[in-house]
Length: 257
Image 1 (spheres, helix red, strand yellow):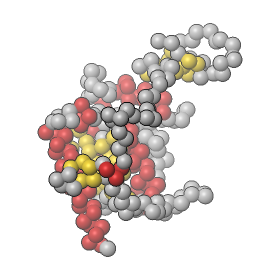
Image 2 (image 1 turned 180 degrees about the vertical axis):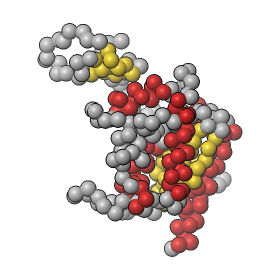
Image 3 (image 1 turned 90 degrees about the vertical axis):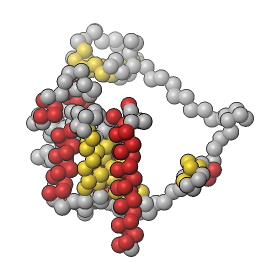
């Protein structure tokens, strides 16, 4: 596969080096630190549509006319959800929003947005200590331990371990969550997910701190099963769990108003 060097195009060609990291050919890291990326594919984003496919205005978008389900924006009823690495990002957002102290020049307020809850779907957490679900993960699984370790090596700052705060919410340098005013959190775990133990441990630790957290675990399901099995019974149960969580948060907020 052709690759484009991250170095300036005017720089002299460097001798071939050993590939020390190869992420499906999309990104390669050489022994001397050179990063090679595959050519970017064009993104199809049409600006015009034929008359047979007119553009849709948001005010016209209706999901279910019989139930009057429409697209509406309610800044006072916002829920943040993330899948896999997106779940990790949602965690950090929840911590930042619920922390009394902010970075210099920053604020923790989200006005006019009011977040009522967070849904972390199989959040991609890590750590130096191996959990049983990591150690026992079969090599044919996706993701497997080798791939997960590779992701962290490519994602974390140079010289960092998997206990970095970006990876491990309970690492030695991670913020103390006991003092964070967390909004309600729904955590989703899969019984066959390599990260299952970390996900369950995350929910159990939050619960021990008295945080409003719910855990929905799906036995026999792998990482991201709802993407690969959108019509399965388990995915339907997940949708119902999220709906109950959202309804509960809204009801609690209205009752407290």
